Length: 271
Ligand SMILES: Nc1ncnc2c1ncn2[C@@H]1O[C@H](COP(=O)(O)OP(=O)(O)OP(=O)(O)O)[C@@H](O)[C@H]1O
Ligand SMILES: [Mg+2]
Image (cartoon, rainbow, N blue to C red; front, side, top):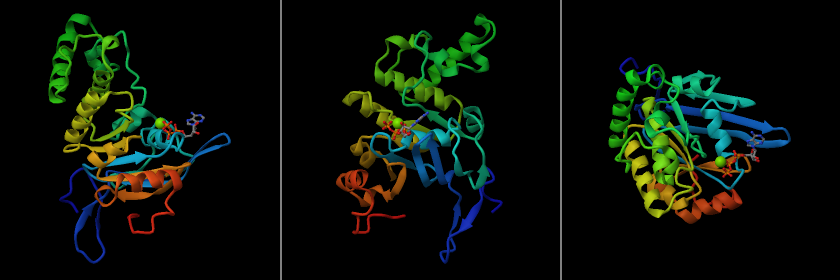
């Protein structure tokens, strides 16, 4: 086990003799109520190294709440969070970030009146201190990140307020990447985008999955079949199961979102 890096716990699969690294992120039996609303009941998932795990379900199914719990924004009422085989508690978003988890929110939370670079580095050293001292390295780093993402933004000194939905999404992605964390949670990154911009964002997500483990909340089922390795279906705050995307059709997933897991007798459920 000592040959595994970052302290990951290893488990031996029964009978196979294969050593498997622990999931990068594991949620076990998570429940959360907001007053009378039971937003989540006993939801579990495992995010594997460098996979894209999609999270789907109707409005109010609990998708954002589940991911906010994984990002330290919302605290679960019960259930456990494990990171790379170690049980942990996420006290705040900063705490989650320090433990390797970065979330890009549904509303992106960008500062419209600031430029791209400031949005990427806000709250960090490069954005404080004397203007003349810190701006240049910040611009350089932002330009490098944008180039890596192959984003269509000509300068990190542009203000975010005039940007398109796709460009704004990319700024939010660049900000998330700037922290160097490996676990990325994206909440409906293409929801507000047109076809061309969606395609560009999805291509970026696909490329990022070579180096990152990604939780992708989406309502767009074609995006699931194009991008995701597995998909977790939530309905009324309950998990309907996790499907292997290559084994199912979009119709299978749609049926599960609407009617729940019972109507899948043909072996499409994998756990
Ligand atoms: N801060 C909150 N206070 C009270 N209720 C909340 C809060 N956050 C979420 N809820 C409720 O919890 C349930 C799940 O909401 P959540 O935002 O997780 O759903 P979702 O699957 O992300 O939906 P959508 O597709 O519309 O984004 C909803 O009934 C919602 O109204
Ligand atoms: Mg949501």
